[in-house]
Image (tube, rainbow, N blue to C red; front, side, top):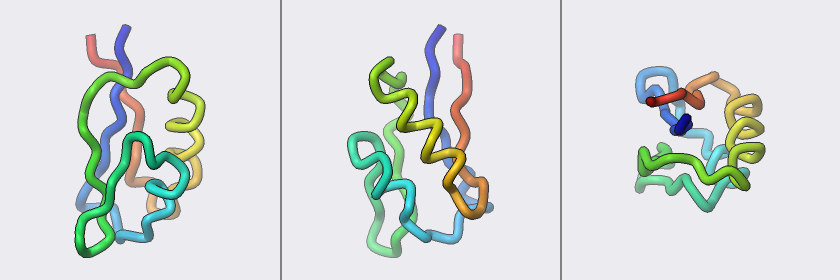
Amino acid sequence: MANVLRVDPIACDGYGQCAELLPELIDLDEWGYPIVSGTSLRPELEPAARRAVTMCPRLALTVVDVR
């Protein structure tokens, strides 16, 4: 099982909290919107990724299972 962090660009308002919570996986573009790599989450980063999903004020982040 591989989990991937995804962002919904329509829902995102560019608050940038996700990049503060998970700088290992999320960069911000010049307008403050998240850029995620789409690579599989390393097991040690999964708790932080789930926290970023929970803390997103627009609920624009999700962790999805890609098999």
